[in-house]
Image: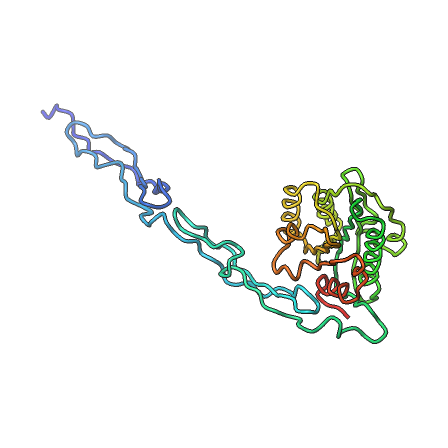
Length: 318
């Protein structure tokens, strides 16, 4: 009797984990499954479903970015004559879909406040014409040697370079390294000194006028590369003394933006033909902290202007 086959009920394994959602926002689906361990036979209990799905990430795809908290205030950009400290906010979570995010320069992400409002001239001790820089800096002095300067302009440029080298290196308590690059055309650009060597007045005196083009983009790129030899705990600064329009505006704009990510870039346009509009486009904000103009070659030995340069370069002066 009972010769018919016995019924066998279905037996299922455990559910797998849920899969990742098929969409990051706007509604997606995630799934899980389980396998059949023993199939139904001979009229046994049938298997329940082996797959399940459920909605996920149903939130809207349009989301504004989420910003971090404000950073601490930076060191003052100038040692005197009113500089600026800055604080910023970074993007913690990026915007999604049609969501918005302010630019890094927007006031909701970058703020300035005035600092070191004292006059540079009033800081000068009796008997001295120029301020001296203190602190720890790696400075690259980039000197235009193009033909548009003329012999008098070139002579004044050398004088300015000499005064700046003296201001950076005269203070015994300071820890400042100075490199100097003389630039003109692409073939007539060379290092006078490197950060690993330091710069002396004799190095400035030994420069010879190239009287050629104005490959400013190449000079900026070389200045940036020089910081490979810089010190990680020193503030990097580039000073550019120039009178002429660059041979390539587009490449110079690109090189300036790239350099500003690595170092403070201060422009010293000299003479009446200096490309001031272009320099205004290239200079970082606030412009007054990054551009000191010498309208006439005769002003290049003006103590007031030179002290503005020193004050704009150095976070502390004496």
